[in-house]
Image (cartoon, rainbow, N blue to C red; front, top):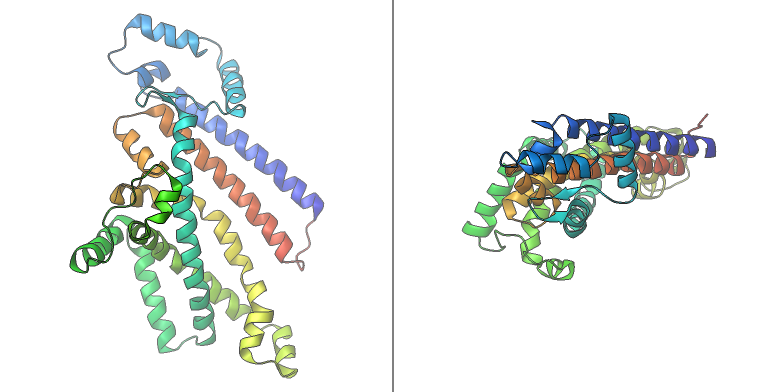
Length: 315
């Protein structure tokens, strides 16, 4: 298994390099070139030339990429002239807030989805199974902005239980302290992901319930509940762990919309705002960070799969 893990780490490093190359190519393909796209249409020829010289855009492309990639390794993602701040600083300010939102929604989704999946597997092809499947598919198919608006209308206006706006503080502690402001954004992201997690859990539990070790445990007098919790659950959660590592892009895409609807000051909201004003360095920097997170998430999912499932042999 060690050899497999080493290969996966090397593949992930190669994936990060390829993602960086793709981002660099996108930078070169900006309308009018990087200098004109970043400085805007009002930049003078002297300003453009100075920008090109300062950022090494007058050098061959392979040299530009080498210098640009070396800067990435030192945390230099460029400079946002719209925000008058480094892109690394922008991401450092807002990424933790998005991670908090994603983490809370994922925990809520797993806490609800895993028991639902187990229940549906044990009561498969019953009315309860069909109803839960229908509700799950409805939420899964519903656009995140529509679900967010429906929750706001229902729980912030008709039933004024929660705030229609997310916490606005720059402090994570204060954001976490504002529980009412977090409920609707977290619920929106959680409801979208519950369907996928519950369906994977249902299918995996159903598959494991037909295995020989389950029949052996039942023959030894174990109750159905003990069989599911003690014997089946660990094996059944392996696909869920894999899905969890691969769901980062989906979670961020959902967070982008949800943060915009609820005015939540996270990275998705910044990405949306800077897309409106064509802040290309910030857009490419955020895209690169999300892509790298996707590669890392895939690696962690594979490592978790290898640890949780010793039956699989890796050659």
